[in-house]
Image (cartoon, rainbow, N blue to C red; front, side):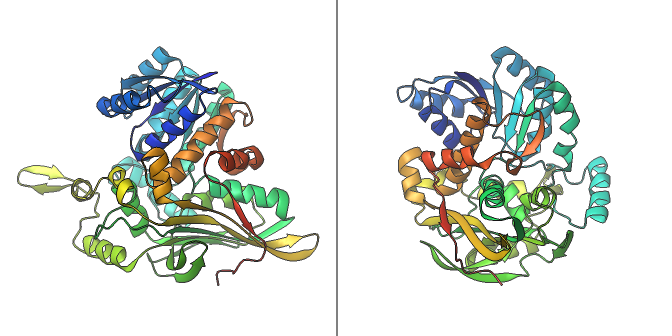
Length: 419
């Protein structure tokens, strides 16, 4: 029996909450909190007769630490699931520390205001020292390690699919398949079609920042940064087919380089269609992806926020998206002195996800791991004080839970490698 506070009520949170309610012997009480309380109320009303989980709702501004503290102290949860925006990771972590509650999220911290002088100074120093220029990195949350250790609390970072399940795949490969891992290629393929000329499958601000940033990868312990979308490969994905994929910077590369230090190269690839890339480049060229406010008719507006208001809501894509996703990791390395390869991945169907939880597969593949990560913490299968990424815990019970709750693994011991 447990009481959980979920902060956020967007597409991913919607999936995670619905999946929690399917495991109502563990998630006996849930409070859904968001700035837009009516969304929480609508979801709670829909789920009321479908689960024995007791669902309540609350309004909270997740940018405000004092509001968060008041809510947490009032509800007294066993765990706070942060499924809001990555901009709010630090305020929610601060509130959890103040209230003595375990914490988890699905994506690492990045600032909403990338022009803030204080943040920019730290960012510029990190770029120079580390060698990659993405706005998001783990350093801000890793700085909380000692605080969480001293408080006897657990903070689980990035428990979605990528990051999240991909890191569990790496831990599983290290534990069961390899004595030494030489290379890791993380492949994220979305073969879905929503019918729009241009739309993003999750928050447009976060998505477009990530995709338009320079790519980077780890080689021989160092970051190698490249111009955005400058490395392209083709791959024939199981259940999806031949797709173009591009090398991106992604957060799990940073943690995996530390937790699997012998690895010689780690790369992340994501598939994109030409229509998406053409639209994105056009929008970038005219300044619509900028996070810097501009003056327009007497008001200050942020171009990418205005673009977000024009694009389809990712939560609305579910009923019209068809096709499958395929996300996983390809490894090379050694076992018992012999060279070997291994591929572990999941295939997820957009329409099947919609039938189950009224969401497309992008939200499903993030929301289900969030529920399974919470399940690990609440049942004590993952329990140690401090701040951790997924691969730092035992992958076996987590992957078993994913198999059971909608994201079963598929294994290939003779995969085609990415050149």
